[in-house]
Length: 422
Image (tube, rainbow, N blue to C red; front, top):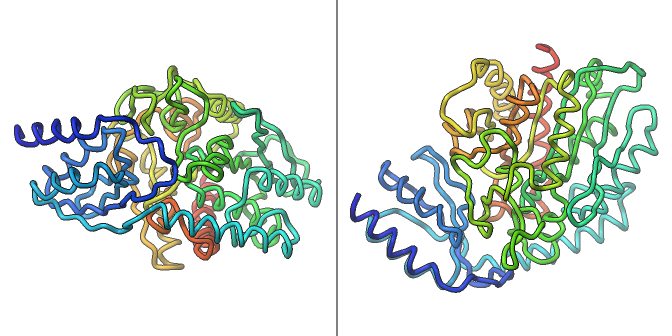
């Protein structure tokens, strides 16, 4: 343990030079690290506390690989440390910047093709911008006025409209139970936004096949929680994760999924305003998280199922994120999550891991799922981590449709379980 601490401190010293300002990711390598012991996993956990290392995923299980992006100037020291402790690793991307530029060009081409040929503002052959997504919601409301309504739930820090779409079966009954789904708390997780849009498409355009899910339930869907960060990830920094409100002259943004006021600021968060897991200066410091809070609380008596879409890693996670202890009703949530995992595996063979956030993945306090469950009283609250694409957060355009189709299989099964039970 003394050797571990000494090596860790040496690496910290090696990495604490001038902040890396480039947004191109040229020369950045992405590593998969396969741990074989608790000691090795603890080493990675300590390394993940360094803001200069971007751990895309750090599973608790020894069987699951961790993935990390390392800047060019840090790669030699990082590899030397892993070699010193005989930690197995493989480079899965030699130059992330090259990959991201290629994918950006492909996405732009697919967006243009979709705009020329599609009847709607969005397709599932490209990742669409925030304005296009909002236009799509408005198109659906105009086309199906008896079943669809769109509201501006609030504004982002940079004054973008954050819209929700409410979908019903058009029978005019008020006071129905609600399934509330959101996506895009983390800006770079583009497949999550696409997943939410596909759910909307299925419930609205494919209503006949999914009418049972709307008989006694309304769905409220917020497809882009963090539009400022999402736009920034399109225009300036593809791997941007946080919101965009300035914290200091050097650092912008807060991790929205560490900003909710339930055990805020505890385990798995950072007080470093430059870190990707920065908890915020206060709980609900961000207009985007306050908006989600207000929606959740407004649905308190009707909300039965809260589902938040993220990526990546093939997980269905439930409370709690702040402790390894389980809620008294954990089996009820587990039953719903297991239904989703089983449906996906039967349909495509893809395996999802089910468990509480802390026990299956890692501890992270201040998350929206914990808040929805413990404060807003949603009996079922689940975080769905969609599959990786590319090196993790960057699926190709060809992967969008199969990924969102698979995701819908799981969401439909979970929703049906909720509808049958509540």
